[in-house]
Amino acid sequence: MMHHDVVRGTTVMKRGKLTLLAVLVAVTLMPMPSSEANAASVVVHTKAELLAALAGAVAGDTVFVDPAASIDLTGQKRIVIPAGVTLASDRGQNGSAGALLYNDELDLGQSETWAQFSLRGAGIRVTGLRLRGPDREIRDNAYQYDNSRGLEVVDASDLLVDNNELYGWSHAAVYLGDTIEGWVRGNYIHHNRRTGLGYGVVLYNNTSAVIEDNTFTQNRHAIAGNGIRTARYDARFNVVTDNALSHGFDMHGENEALGNGAPYAGDVIHIKQNSFRSTAQPAIVIRGRPFTGAWVSGNCFAHSGSSTAVRQTNFTGNLSIGANTYGTTTGTCHQTGRRIAWRYSSGGTASYAPLAHYTFDVSEVGFGDFDGDGRTDVFRATGARWYYSPSGSGAFIPLAASGLRLSSLRFRDFDGDGKTDVFTTSAGQWQFSSAGLTGWQPLATSSAALDSLRFGDFDGDGKTDVFQTSGGRWYYSSGGATSWKPLALSGDAITSLAFGDFDGDGKTDVFTTSNNQWRYSSGGATSWQPLASASEALSALRFGDFNGDGRTDVFSISGSQWRYSSGGASSWIPLATSGCPLAGLHVSGDFDGDGRSDIFDGRCGG
Image (cartoon, rainbow, N blue to C red; front, top):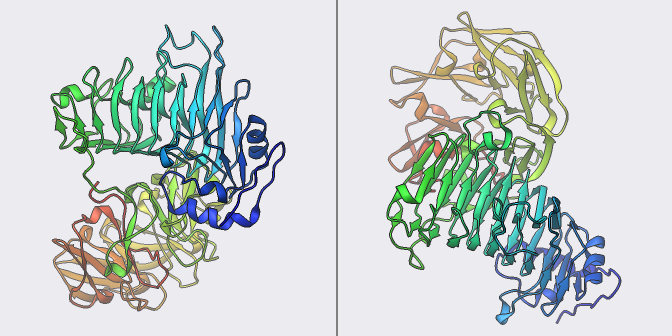
């Protein structure tokens, strides 16, 4: 049996207990059992102990607050929870309410906005606590008293806030700013309802979040975003019992935040499998046109129909209202549907295996090997910083800070170090960031638009070259650093071409299809050579190495049957079956490092 140390007035960390703790935290999303106290780095009972423990905590530590504790934090603001640290109690275990941390500071006429806890960096968890703010009332206006936030999360990644009671925070219980993949799960969030503010969970700027399995009661908005075109949330399996003064789920317009006249209201919004139990206000209001889109389906509304449940204001478009249930919100009616998360099929032959819990679709991410371990990683550009998830299964790791989004970027290895680099073009200057970590490094100059360029290794030197068509001839720039070098003569448009190594010589070949005949040009330097005959259009094909022989295969879907042609030269060979459309899959990555292409699924079915 493990024993914990009670620490009073100092900070003592029991390092030998951290390995087991890290495993437990990583694999469970259930409320932290009381036995977690035994594995905790430190158990605290008082304000002094709590402040000392957090000040000394490092990544991997857990600060466990005694369930019987009621700690007055009045006078303390923006207490830092360091990256990788868990702050926990045992709410929900054996009837425990969990430790209570509260702050009663409420100053009339003050314009200050303050936070109880400040969270920055990767991998922070707050679980099993009661966090009570100073003001559960509506008030006459937004700034009648000072404003408070329970958890203020800025420039963070892979946050987990789960199984807490969060209430009495006049601005927001959970504030997420410039944060990738905040995960707010299984909380009771209520009475955060200040006039003009009062958010359960609010997203600012370049932020994405998954908000699920929460119960929201008496918040002005249960969920909201400030409308910047880079903001994204996935709200699912939540229950909104009622609201104070206004609607439940919201996305402001970018123009409201910036005054720039932009029509946008966030980027991607998924609102699925939620229950909205009050008809006093609309359930959902989108205050503009989402940059990519908003999807509302599988929800249960007390409202009589979609026109009273969901509204779009200011600008219209990019809003899809699918099948929902109206006029009823029984306890289970919103709980059906797949819980979307990344998954992959090894070699395209195996059943789906889980990857990370993220919900980005394939169109929202890039792919490459940014750490050089031979496995495909998943890349995300938030509009503030780049991140990658190792093998698509690990937590996001920050790369360089950059405002460039996915549409402006390409991914290849321009310096030949075995790691994927990030490529872009700016005012005619090609440039790359090595492994996505460095500042921009110059390559060649060219007036060619990014969309007119393709990439491969046409000279076999291990560095990515840049390819274009011009005047009836193909050209490449070696490593993207030289002037254009001629390849074969061809009048085929760039949009009619694909690329792979169909003869296995280590150089990139050029592929096309015409009159039901697949053809390739070896290294882009030879005349067309025949491959298999097939009727599929180029847009219906993808490319990878599914049998691991070092040659590029051709992939397609027929009905629900995945299939490939070995080297593009054989008849169709069956793989696994799936109902996912081709557009929802990434086909050419190797996520398990076995030398075969795997099939990655982002949001198929959701």
